Length: 165
Image (tube, rainbow, N blue to C red):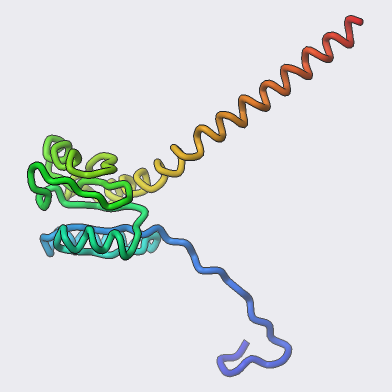
C-alpha cells in the first residue's frame, strides 16, 4: 500500500477503536499528580483526566463518566461527602489516612500509597476496574452453574431409573 490515495485494488480494513477505561485522577500536588498520571499513561491502557480541585472533580465526573477514580486523601476534608459515580481508590500516606478518607466517598474500594511502586499502583487500578465486573457477573454465573448442575443430576437420575427398570 502506498502513502497516496487508494487504488481500486486496495481495500480499507475497519479496525474498531480500542476500549480504554476512563480513569479520573484527583490530585492537587503537581509532583504527585504528574507522577501518577505519567505512570498510568505509560501503560497505554487508560484514558486519563486529571483535576486539581474537588469541585472540578465532581463536575468532571458528571461530564466525563469514568470507570475509576483515584483521589488524594489530603484533599478530602473531615466530614465531607463526595459522589463521583464510579468506584474510587484513595491515594494516601497510610492505611489510617486511607480509611478515614474512604468514609467520605460513595464507592470507595480501598487505598494505595501515594508513593507506591509503579507496578503496585497499576495493579491497584486494575483490581479496581476488574472487581466491578466480577461482582456484577458473579450471581449470573453462579445461577447458570446451579442450573446446569440441576440438569445434570436430573439426567443422571433418569439414566439410573432406566437402567433399573
